[in-house]
Image 1 (cartoon, rainbow, N blue to C red):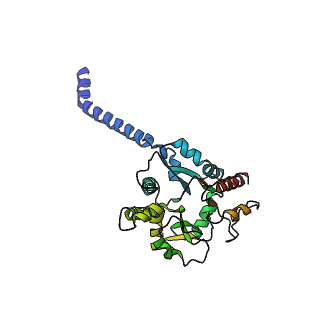
Image 2 (cartoon, rainbow, N blue to C red):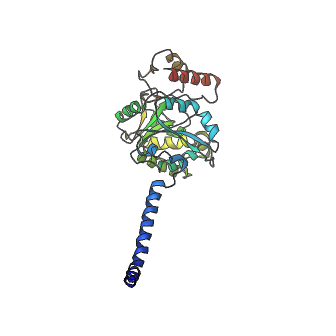
Image 3 (cartoon, rainbow, N blue to C red):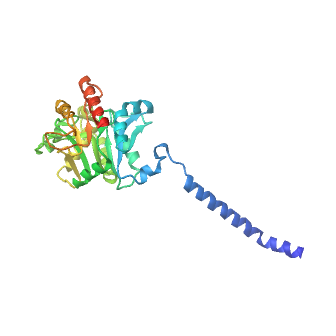
Length: 298
């Protein structure tokens, strides 16, 4: 009997080892897939998988505390409306002239999201939000376009030789404002790749252009090229979502006494504000604070 037992064990010994190894592999694989390493920016996996809208605020700097302090008002208004918000670029350092690095930072972040994800990309030190994701998306989808840029009254941070592409618009808000825009991730990625190609093409602009417009001008070239194809890209010339305050500071100030902040030129109630100059001009800094107080206390 003992001899038969030994023969039986000898016969099955190799299979026991193989089965044991397979079980270990299965357990390890399950653990890896369940507990795989997630980068800092992706620790909340739900953030990247399920939100209806993402809002990304520019913050290219290695100093997280400095960026969060500068963007505090932007972040607080976003939090009030429960928006999925992230400052992008923290940990990066500028390696190119002015804000050209934004293209390369955005390329990295767009790789992490679904192709059909709708994303708002905006400055974070002089912007505020005054609406829910549902309101923002409802208005965006009415445009029936893939990418929507904010528009402003002034021709700022753009290349003069591209201005003619925007002159036919009848609205006073006819010019591209590249500080706030939104769209589907797949289309933003294509636009961003095209802009990088333009940026790296020395024939696309002059050195004088680059000093006056940086990445804003490159985006203006791209938008100007496709502006007639409204299914591809549009400007928010009616301030449905974005209100850029260039030449509108006094006008905006007067609206703070109303229950809802309305643009009297367009008779619309914008949901995102870009208060240009709020980081450097004393009067505009005060206006920015007043708008912030209005939003937070409404």
